Image (cartoon, rainbow, N blue to C red; front, side, top):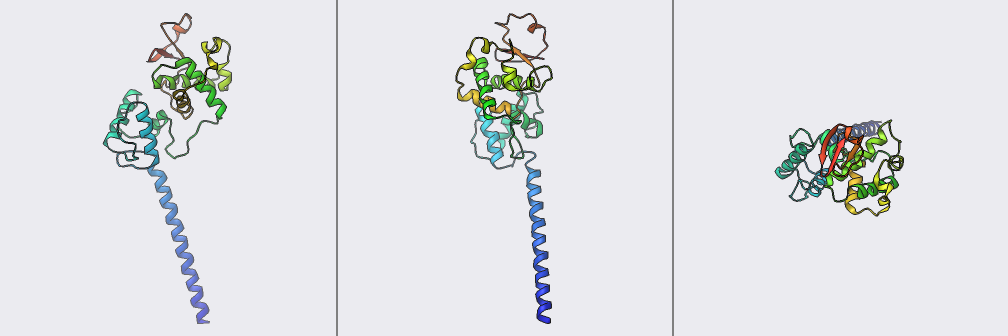
Length: 230
């Protein structure tokens, strides 16, 4: 009987220890998720590398893509924030992450769009904005997506792009050109949530625009040769 009692006690201790370890593991995992909700000086990991890669591609960051959130990364984030109308605190929180088109919980989202949507958006960006600054190319993609979300326009990327009279590149056939890597990257960034226009539905080149109606729209910002309006 003593042996049985000892065995029962031993099993009970093992079960208690296992439950404790599971609880501690869950706490660590939850803590890790909470920590990645904000990136700041001292943060490390793959998400920091993503931030550094994007900032370097866009010309804000000149340091190493090492996954370490140091002083150079802080300065680059502040530069990006100032350029995009965000609070320049050097911290990548929800709003800055959205502007960069990244997900802080490591689960990137393209809003349910597929590869065909992405490629068509890249073709539109290339046809309409090749030669524009990278931010301006993303902005053109964002305008398309803002129209998809608006009840005033078709509810798909193809519907918006091919809406009669909506884009010159469709009328003149440039929509059929093969997009380059930059346009494809801009399309991905737009699909991942970066909207440099903050919700604009229109853009035009004031040097070539002939429609009197488009000039009546409220201009919110200028990127490169394009005015972006609502």
